[in-house]
Image (tube, rainbow, N blue to C red; front, side, top):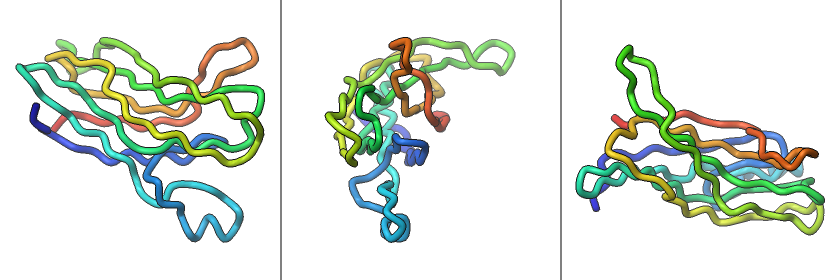
Length: 143
């Protein structure tokens, strides 16, 4: 396996963030817990299969009674320069016991395909109907 590209996802949203383990000291002064720097998204290649590998930390706060997880949506390049959906995969869900600030380590590479050229990394929260909805996201392309 070799790394053919690398990106730096940092998602700061409502109640769920993603990035490094290091807290943002400026935001912390205001009582806000969010990552100071990004996590990593390595584009790994083995035998022609591209597997985006997401590593970092999911930050949650004020989510008692619900759940959060990371989601990766994979795309290939279409014939007209558009993108064709290949797959969507999620991390294990995090079920907070209370509304306190919590950290969950993320290390996921659940899907690989020779055609993957784009991935959308998203934080998600479970809604009242039991479905995970996108909270915030970032899009990355294989270069």
